[in-house]
Amino acid sequence: MKLDKAPICPHCKKDTEKYDVYPWDGVGWGVPFLYICFNDNCPFFVRGQKHMMENYGQVASYRYMVYPDTGQEDTIVAANPKLMEARMAALKTQPDEPETEN
Ligand SMILES: [Zn+2]
Image (cartoon, rainbow, N blue to C red; front, side, top):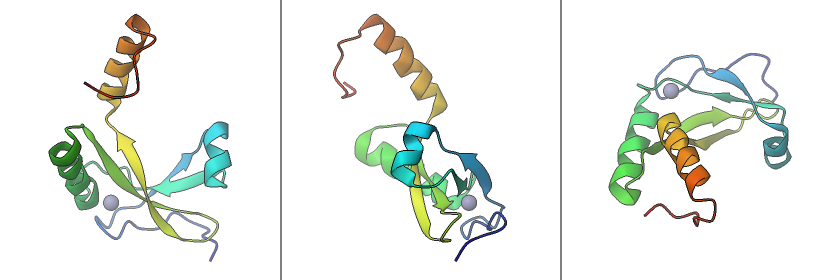
């Protein structure tokens, strides 16, 4: 079912936000944008953060998302912005570094 407005996140009861996917991302998602819960206190996000740290030692998490064209629920990996900045700095000094962290 196509959605005409941002749905409520079932985990924290807050409105999801319209998130434009990048063109190269859009190929994979098949939609111009997604509805994503950006609440950092969302139980789903908090739980994912704990899970990622305990299992992978990574500061990252998942966010609740919904496809606007079908209303189908899914999850999207949310990396910590600070981690991405640190990684970008590391990549600049070591361009041939493999994808793995430590
Ligand atoms: Zn939420």
